Length: 427
Image 1 (tube, rainbow, N blue to C red):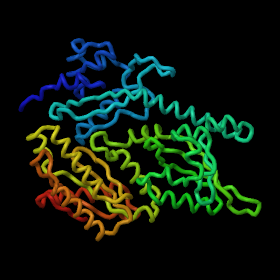
Image 2 (image 1 turned 135 degrees about the vertical axis):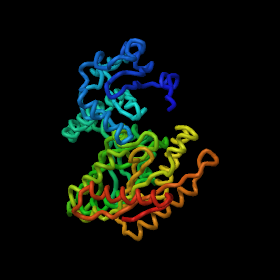
Image 3 (image 1 turned 45 degrees about the horizontal axis):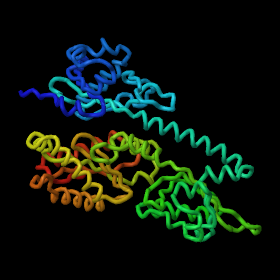
Image 4 (image 1 turned 120 degrees about the vertical axis):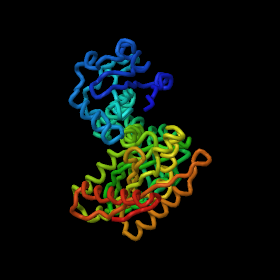
């Protein structure tokens, strides 16, 4: 067996921490970022036990996470919901906040499974955390200003995005803060239709729901994606309120917006697979578990599809992990382009992907799955490498739990592999 040489130069160049330990916590690699930020040189820690340097780590949790990563062969998170840091690292950046310790996202990835070794990666998400704190602070400010709406119009004009439109969506007035946020002069947009801010990639269903609600004399609350005069896309938490005349009819609309772009980006970070940009397994699990928990028939008409790239280990071993990553990205892009807007697709782990085909019959699913299979078969990476994938799919049965449907779809995928790969099996 060949021993894998640690990629010292590559890992030492990264702006995040990487260590390699075994299930007994013996350290066999410690990159330059960790040496700088912890003040522990690699010569002092390699070959020694991590417990000697960081006794406060919850090793019971760490051992369980290591076992999970080695068993399922995919990365896992270390207690991401905990306020306690994996290892305490002081921030060396001057900041206006009281955040003195580095906020961390920690992943545990299988490294050399035969030697029970994992790579622990530490990412500094302090700035994103500060952004979240800032958003909360700004939201509190907006709430306080809304309470004084009538008494402090000048403050509102300068600090809140407000728009007044006619019943047909013609802009009648906007606040100064709205103009500043959209990089536009008030005179440029008065008399224009609000649709000038609409982005084509936002579902028409959202706008239909909005207009139906407010024309029925009810307020609408939701998230809208608009484009500024400089072509920048922004997300806004929006409240649109109908204003009635003396006869009780809708006379005009008032809308209040709050920029939540940074909050959306932060949320996306936690539900997105960093390599393929698809949803991650945790988000897919949360979605399907919510459906199973509620057991609403309207949500349960879906087909579950499990996709596995054929001979992926051969690609990795023959061409290297960079080409392997290219294969994963290529299949992910094919899946996204082959599915409908309301379908859900995520990276399940390793070379596996999972799809939820919503509001779909078995016959419709057969057509969609075959289309995806053919599209993957017709794709080529690295100029001459052809890809294929195997599929297992099954229909959700109302009343069953997620383990049952995943067992069934996993069995279907296994049959597809055993039958020669590059095919789909329905169970």
